[in-house]
Structures are given as C-alpha cells and as structure tokens.
Image (cartoon, rainbow, N blue to C red; front, side, top):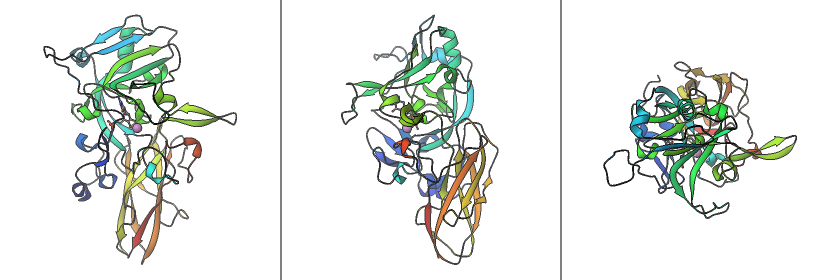
Length: 366
Ligand SMILES: Nc1nc2c(c(=O)[nH]1)N[C@H]1C(S)=C(S)[C@@H](COP(=O)(O)O)O[C@H]1N2
Ligand SMILES: [Mo]
C-alpha cells in the first residue's frame, strides 16, 4: 500500500461534472491508496438515482430481482434471499468508458471527465453464475441482459424511444465467469444509493457501463441485445475486413494515468520528485509502466507498488531528478502481460470512448 500523502486531504470531496443526474469525479491527483473510499468513488448516472426499498411491511413496493427469458425457472428473489446465498469478495476496478475525455481535441461530445472517472473498490456479492444456474439457462440462450431500476428519456439525438431503463448485456460466457458479481456490499458496507443499492452488477475487466446499478431484471436472451446503451451509446467502430462496424464497448484497454504532477504544476528544480499514478488493463495483468520526462524521447521503468490484484489497478511511482529549469512534458505508458501497450495517438474509430492513448502532462520546473 502506498504511503498517504497530504494531497488526499487537500481535496476531500468529489468534483461536480453534472449536478443532476449526479455525475461526480474522483479528484485523481489525490490518489494515495489502493481502495478508494465509497464517499470518494466517482459516480456516473444517466438518470435520477432510484431509491429502492428492501424492507417488507412498508407502504411502498418492495424491491425484488427478477430473472426471466430463456430460463427453465423464472425467479423473483428478495434482498434477504440473495444475501443468504454463498458470497464472494474481491477488489475490482471500474472505469467509465468516457474517462479522460477532456483530453480529446477537438472537444468531444459527452461528459468532459478529466482523469478520475475510475476507481478500485472491494465488492461482495453473489456470482451471477449461481443465479443463472438456479434459474436454469435454456440451451438456445446466448446473452444475459441486465436492467436497472433507473429510467428516463434522452431527447437530444440520438434520442431514446421514449422512456427507457439503463440496460446492457453480457455474452453467456462472460456472465458465467466466477468474478462477475451481483454485489450488495462495497468496501465493507451495504451499497449506497449512488452506487446501486440494493444490488448492482460488477463486471471486472470491462468498462463500467456493464456494471449495472439498481439491478432489478435479468433477462436471458436468445439473441444479441441491441439496446440504446449498447449500440447508439457505448459503442465504437471496429474494422471488420476493413469495414468500420459498430461494436459494443466491452474489455478495458491497458492504461496508466499520472496522479502527480498535474498539468502546469510548478516543481522545484534539481531535486527528487515522486511521479506517481495507477495502471490497469482488461483480461490480463500490468507487466510494466514506463515514464518519460522529455516528451516521449526517452522512457524509463517506473516501480510497480504492492502486489498485483486481478482486475484491480496497480499503483506505481517513479523518482524523477528534476532538471535545472524550464517546461517539461511527462508521460506514462503501461504494457500488459498480453503485450498490449498504450498507443501514443488517439484512434478516431473509438469515437468519444476508450481514451487510453498516452496523455502528456506539461509542468514548469523552476
Ligand atoms: N442502472 C445504471 N447502471 C449504471 C449506470 C447508470 O446510469 N444506470 N451507469 C454506468 C456507467 S456508464 C458507469 S461508468 C458505472 C459507474 O459506477 P459508479 O457510479 O458506481 O462509479 O455505472 C454503470 N451502471
Ligand atoms: Mo461510464
């Protein structure tokens, strides 16, 4: 675990990107630990937060999780029933597919996140596979659609067909992976309303639009889901035999971010400065992080901290002997064990998502 720096106290709250629906960013320069406390974890909501009731006997409807579609036994489970099932706890990183969008030039559509629409937390819940087994997936099934209780209408083009719920799907093979959870606890406490109370999906290794909050319905489907947040939103162009083909965003790209220094930070000349940040990847492990302090001409290895944790980020540091003075451009670049490395240039086929190219940070040494 990295030592805590005073920076963590310097900005104790979250940055407001949109007040309502809540879209709140973790101030990434304050990164000083492996697990981000819940009250400092970024929030990404498309619609108003639904406040759901799990206590019987109240004069308001009670929340239940329904499982339906191509299953032998449709289910309707209460909070208590779900919490009695065997659980699993593990750390996992969530990154919004739009994280770092403010770095896109020209300015992109969508929320202009800086670096902090990302975080690692510890999640406890029931593996989705166990719920699917209880319901009995029929052999014609190919995907699992996860639907949240939140709903609304988007009027700006591309507009939604009226009011819709936030929903996303997973191919069956992914849905059955043991680390995919229906989580009811985050960092050792019950989920908060902002992070999906009473139940959310956590899909480690995928961009976080797949980790559906306020989960109310699981629909096992015989055909690939083509919902709004899977096609019109959260999709990119993949070249299939050279033809750009709209494809749902899935696996996380390898990425390193610099927490400190920040853009235009003034740094003392001729001293040691601790450059530090975090790095992560999709279905692999971070193999190395390299840092350049001269705009990308020379790269040197950063030190990876702590131990690797599957599906979480890896904190790293690099001790920089600062020069006598002047402007400097810092960069960090991660490579994973599958040999994937961060590109230096932005790929326009990614539209305004998956912003994983190297992000230069200019500083002033004096
Ligand atoms: N029901 C529902 N689930 C959702 C969303 C949402 O708006 N509604 N946003 C998704 C997106 S785009 C992200 S990045 C993550 C953010 O999770 P967090 O708010 O707990 O950080 O939740 C995902 N799950
Ligand atoms: Mo997101």
